[in-house]
Length: 127
Ligand SMILES: [Zn+2]
Image (cartoon, rainbow, N blue to C red; front, side, top):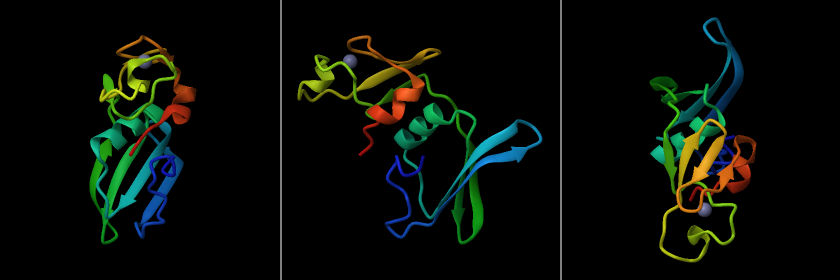
């Protein structure tokens, strides 16, 4: 999941991930720990779509300084490319992609194409 975001630790960033950590409240949940790095809002939005039950721990000097429950956004901007090749967002126009988050997936604001959640990694376009 973090490799998708390009923060796999290869830049000297300390990153640790705990997936499916047992929690008495939720049964299991995903925990994303990021050391010495703040996540941008787009990255948090992407995580929220891929892992809606995840918690992000921001760690500095081996201490958790921030803990965020990821909240599912109502829309994501500039993080997914549209699967419709004829969409204006794929036409080299200076248009930021924008997808509305619906129950059935993410819907392009411009052409109405739907990206289902299991297809999200395919269309991720995080700079
Ligand atoms: Zn589109």
